[in-house]
Image (cartoon, rainbow, N blue to C red; front, side):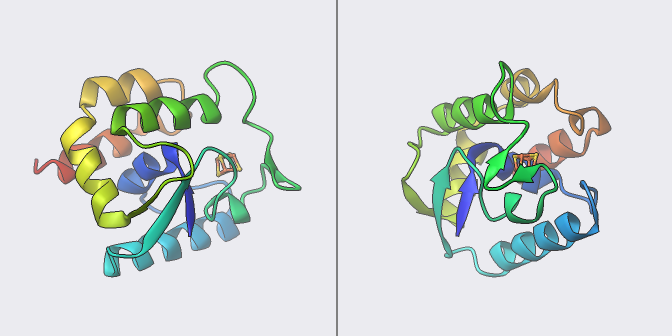
Length: 134
Ligand code: SF4
């Protein structure tokens, strides 16, 4: 499985919302799979991934939200820098969530994600708080 950097944070806050029905179903299935089997290996990327696979913004394998300052690709890279993970490296989901727990803070997440359309709902930040144990 391939997952892009910023989607690790999106997954923490996912509450069944998304771009359309197909997108939500796919994302829900991926999260359930990873939650049930935390030793699944994930190749970390900064381009379209298994979640993007069903996204209406994915046009022939390219995200149309990708290439501008503050875009999702920039978020991927900043988040991976915080987690000290390089693009292309492979980790278990467990290892990645441990790193998020250890290295990601609410302040950093707010700074990285504040311009995302979903962030103001508060679910993502709550997801991080829950992961960190309250
Ligand atoms: S908007 Fe782009 S990064 Fe987000 S899920 Fe869709 S294709 Fe992937």
